[in-house]
Length: 263
Ligand SMILES: [Zn+2]
Image (cartoon, rainbow, N blue to C red; front, side):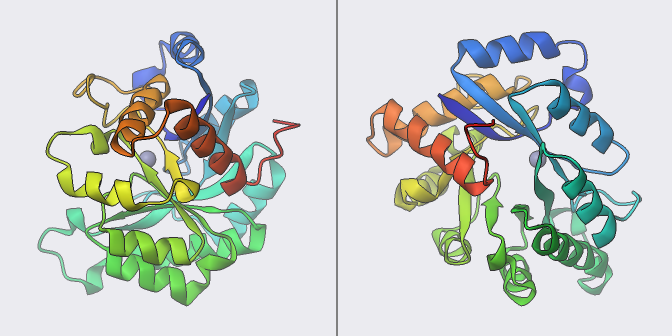
């Protein structure tokens, strides 16, 4: 059985076809999926999905790419996370300088402040972090260290950075999660990095509806296709598919501190 450690089933792409998407998970041996929050206005829908479906979990947080959106406070995140058993993580949070364009470094301070708020909330609520980092790995690791993110750990989601960045995150107790990007023909550097990441520190995800793996590239991605990411990595690392599936699934439950007896 596989687990999709990161998806966005509340997005409009899935509104009309949730039963089909859940059935596809089942037939592809994908037992669970984590629905990740990106902003406060849409969070109730993320929570509702997790509350209505035993095999879906939720996180709470505001994505670094979302500007002009209500800013979360530590208190809001901690309160929300502690009120609902299906909320298993804080995020997604992190830094994304890719869309900074010609704005100054100083003008992105709001993103760094927001990231710090999420780390404080994770520590206070004792929940792991879901971290997004793009074109900002030096600051991401620096803030993780400054704010004590190693006290809760979590996952570097949709990982596309170097092995050196992965190593620093693993040293802080974080898992490294690979998406469909690793299956792309042009992703040769990422494939080399993936080979070096120990299986015990690895998760797999879809980030659906985005980033469909080969052979579905360009289509609307869905949690069922995390199996394609798993199959690809098993081949890349020369491992039996069952070993890859069991290990990444166990890692998921370990990372998010889920007691499988009650899940
Ligand atoms: Zn995401």
